[in-house]
Length: 494
Image (cartoon, rainbow, N blue to C red; front, side, top):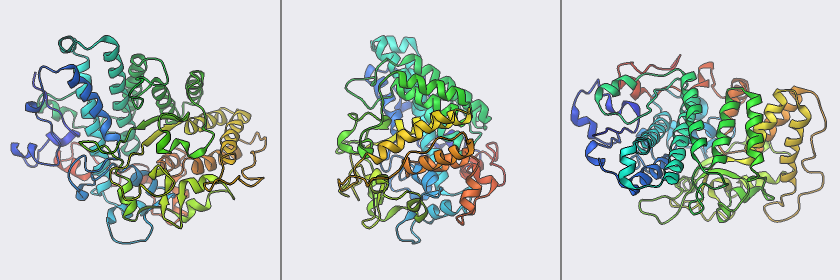
């Protein structure tokens, strides 16, 4: 069977253009039927799953060559999450370079802003690749031809289901209702049918269904593959299930799932705060649950391209973010070196050696245990277990104050004292919000937190940003609306 694959939903829907040859022009990203084998090998199946990870990477130019105009030079998480929040800004020195990033920063953007087209394109390309992998893996006849064993087939299914869920998790949080594509498309009629926005409740339900399928397919163990330790694990699935529950305010479920994760005894807080980010300790630390595995010197490239714009002056912390750290908190020094203009978390090392390197080896971290623990603390507080919440907050603070400074000296006595006992839910939430900001700073969580806490407007307008009620969702990329003559509708007030 010939199958059409797409990078994002409306690549096939050219109502305005109406010319077939347009389907094969860059940067649509269409994988044509001629490029798809009708008799896949075991390696074809494995490669299809491996390629499904790729759109979570920070590698440069995956969807074109220096295509700044469409916002696809790299994955735009830092722009739509960190720069949009009060934690980061485009550059250390303000200039007019890539002004669309500044527009995201001050919420003066339009629906044609490159940031939204970029993240939309990366996510739907990832979904298309996961759908292709699932198409192979769920076809018994095709699988039989390859000779792939049942255990490997099951594991690869789990990985593909998780990855599709992750891409949709990103889309629904950025855009709300989004088109749902759950299989490779075999005709233009099918393409027309899916070019409508599904209600976000339906998207959340599909995310949960995919995660349930992933959980039942992956093997037990901290790593699903002893050689390729970067692959999705059961722990990653359980963690994302907990995050889905948190974002939907199902707090009792969050607690149950994090308890389940803790029962596995695979994860704990690293003794040193920076170990999660240290490129020399990848897959040997105790805290990272899911990360994209960047490696240098590969063809095609697989390095961490985010280090390149750091060398061009891009990506800097705000003064407000730096001021958020308590006195002598060593996490600030491990996060950012202001005098030398280095963001160590993004560089994966503490010397600046990766700065400007477009093929750096440091991983992109998506889920780590400290984040998960703070989800549980939040859920405990929301269910009126303030002592349990405070205990977790203090565990995170203890690890921070027992980490030496970045220069190797002990942290001064009295730094980051434990939060005292309290039954005041609002007070504990304030402590939690503060701890999340400094513990997870510049890791892409702050803007999501502000939105789900429904404090984004108050916090960001107080800092001079033009955040409006509509800003809780980003606009659908205008190109997607225009190509479908409005069949894919725009978010309200854009």
